[in-house]
Length: 305
Image (tube, rainbow, N blue to C red; front, side, top):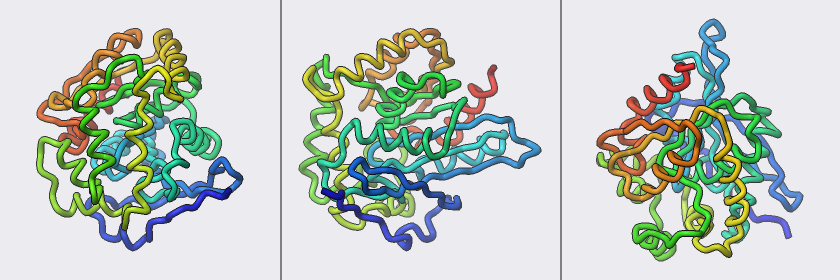
């Protein structure tokens, strides 16, 4: 059966604050023979200043490429090409209307098509936040030859071998029972600073009504919580690869991130030679709280070699 898709009207994105980027789109296979349109930002430096670095910025739940609006310009100014896709179900990308069309594996397959099959990216510096890490770290483990270095923040890659934390349990309940589900409220609760109304409007823009929200609703349920989850075995295999990689790896720890605290330990201890930076006075969406500081950390890490 063909996947039923919602496409957010372009007018919802008119006049967004601090988001001047030209839209780019690729078409991918949804997995049933039908197509999905995926949006991405692709900002490139002046050829004379280009360093040849490609920075792939992966957002999480329930944000979109708007999260990186203040990170992209300074990286481009430093000579780097920045690509920030909107995951299927988010931002300007198509949104299947049936939540059961979203699985961990389908998200991986969709993202793999975008970054490798369509954009043909290689030698990538990956920056991943939240679910951007749950997906990006799997891609790293499965295609390590495509990546040059990694910056991870407020993320991990669960295998279901630990009891979920109290905060995760609360989030699972809120994500399913909130009526309405308001993306900007989620982001606002995960920041130290209070979001401006215009910024809140931008985080709500992709979701005109509940039928557009099924990806955001489903994402929390895809986190492996038990050893019997579909993603448990693949994630365990991914960890076995990550523990052997000799790749520059930086974990940026937001000091007020109480949502994915385990990432600091699990990634920092597992990845050989992993480094750590602290993002002070920043919550789970620390990129929103301290975008300039975060961009500076990424730029320094990229230029360290």
